[in-house]
Image (tube, rainbow, N blue to C red; front, side, top):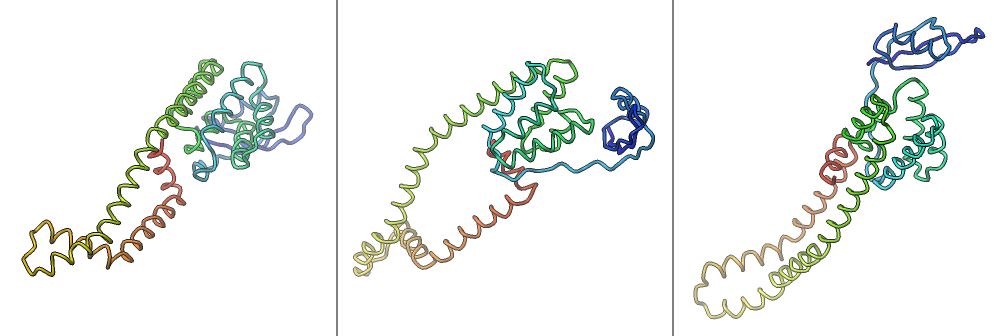
Amino acid sequence: MATFTYQARDEFGKIVRGAMSAESEDQLAGKLSNLGYVLTRTRMVKEKKKVLAPSGRIKRKDIIMFTHHLNTIEASGISIRVGLRDLAEQTENEKFRKVIENLLRDVEGGATLSEAMDKYPQIFSELYVSMIRAGEATGSLEDVLSRLAAQLEWQEETRGIITQAVIYPAFLLTAIIGLIIIVITVLVPRIMIIYTTTGSPLPLPTRILLSTSSFFRNQWIVILAGLIVSIITYKMIGRTPGGRLQIDRLKA
């Protein structure tokens, strides 16, 4: 489906300009006719690139509340345009408010809700958009939104359970790693002094342990630099659209 900019006249002869999605100019003229406009001029525009919202700025809970509100709007018979406008005014998350305002602008321009959402793959997953599209096509958008809200809540609860289950092992692993570092860098060198003073050859495992201890004590700057570079690289990747998308997919 292409996007057209158009110029039309209403029943009073007033010029109206805007943009709308349609399969062809004839379909565009039909859509405008249903709105009470007569098409006078049109031009096809290139498809806009999908917009990627900043990573970490819009939480799953925001999307859950947004879906619940859309479901309430659809159930009450309020038009999507009016509902989106109210949601934009009520949303506290400024980043998400801008997204909703963009959705409203696209819908007012003639795009369907699913077409507008499809521009934000970081916020609305492919499954989410596909279900919205199916609901629009079958006239069951209310049921689809209800199922989506329930599914998103289940995912959020599952993520919380997994997070709680991982916290203790992660803390325990960190403590073990810290203990190993202390043993290698502090205790082992002191113990090794006793063995080396005897002049007898050391067994292979002992020599490996001693070399490891020496590496950690003498190359700690290299290790620290490697960690810092890894963190900076992760942050830089997270600032790129493609990198943010991949990171969010790994987190999901």
